[in-house]
Length: 65
Image (cartoon, rainbow, N blue to C red; front, side, top):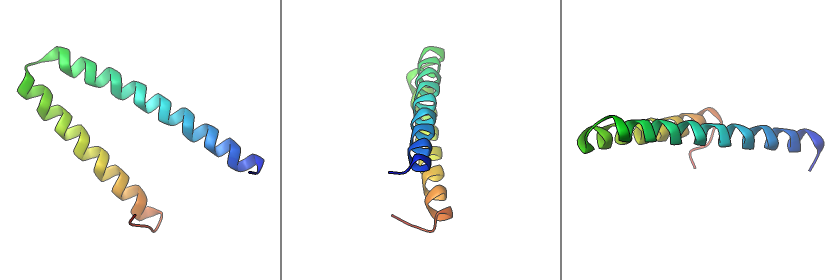
């Protein structure tokens, strides 16, 4: 693996960890802020947005895996 690829993998890993931490805090705050129905609706919206984002990212890369 060349230096450029290794650097990009490190950056991607750092971003993934940061995003996971942000989502953990958001989910925790959503859980504490309302009732179960409200929490489940927020989680469903987050899941749908994540799927849309992944699909869009794959389409932009020219793949539909």
